[in-house]
Length: 349
Image (cartoon, rainbow, N blue to C red):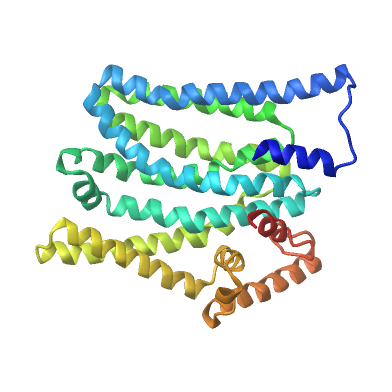
């Protein structure tokens, strides 16, 4: 398939590759690629340092409990990151000004938050019945690890997007500095938590991620002139809805425990309660990311009166925000006629 695509592109395009050597261009490319390669190599070792440290000093059993919880947290992040990354990077690369870049980036973060935040919060809330029902009671030590790491999943899901800012802006040198700093801090956190066993390592790691989060966002946000308050303003609705969902799950499971229901029914009812409560909150709040998701669906779905009301509400909100931005100056999250979200939609299609 790739060979056929290459041949078709070669035939259809008038441009033909030629040989031109420029030491200046070579230095530029090497600077970009060497920093990126170094970052990926360092990230690989830093991300696997936990397995080495836990396995070496705490034993295979502790490593198994930790690995299960870590896998459950990272799988949704990797899935969303892979699916969105194929669209986000080329879409961002086509944007020439920082304002359009900010709009596109914030919409992408909103889409991630819409999907990942409730999964992480729900997983932490239902950790006990989930581990015991899906895996078995022998994996119960993973429950507390999963609960502690669920906030890490929230931060990591959004933090994983900043690499696109570094790449599009050509600042892989800053990305390398970030990868080196964060990797070193995380590796040290594992060592610091060893005296308190697996629980201590998990708490130390989670604390390090939460503390590094502020720096991890601040560095790339300077490149696109994105203010932290505008970033948090976009994410806060999804976080608050996820917390409200967790409260509903907690009340449901508290009642089920009081009547002696099994963990299977706690998991089933808790999952249903979480899905329904979060869906209702989304329909009431009509967040921008939900409207974007609906716009990517088939036309027959978009024309549904319920879904159409959500997209219409966001269009009115966009117009109001844009008008306010033109009146009061640059607004970092306003939507104007450039509509970078169209680039996002075209990329998905």
